[in-house]
Image (tube, rainbow, N blue to C red; front, side):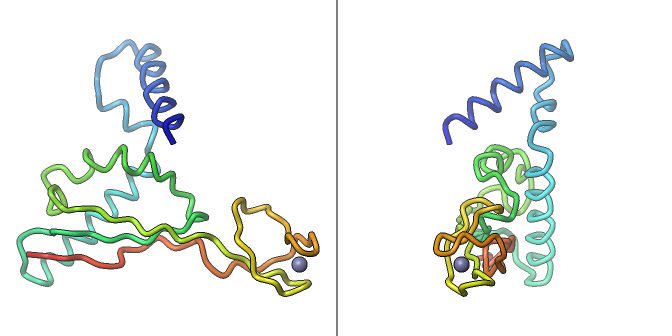
Length: 144
Ligand SMILES: [Zn+2]
């Protein structure tokens, strides 16, 4: 976790050096994927606020699977910039991490998937169905 944070900072300085610029906006370049996801979440929240005729979001609860392709540290990292001056600016963000699970197509046991290429721990088969872990959704919004 800490490694990724330092890695981002390291990349930032590296890129800054390459571009010979002090612009802080270049940092978003690194976390483009998570940034676009965060901006998508802001869009969802803004639509909900408009529908509910509310003013601001107090709490936003997300469900993200471990196979959703989201780097949690990167999402935390880009979050403050993404929500600035939006309805989510002061909202508490809660992330429910959904551990990926698969069902072996050969022996039918259900097991936790840590890596997408994991084989069955029981029979070593690589054939599996993914039961959960690809989720990326806004589970709840608390508005005022
Ligand atoms: Zn199996």
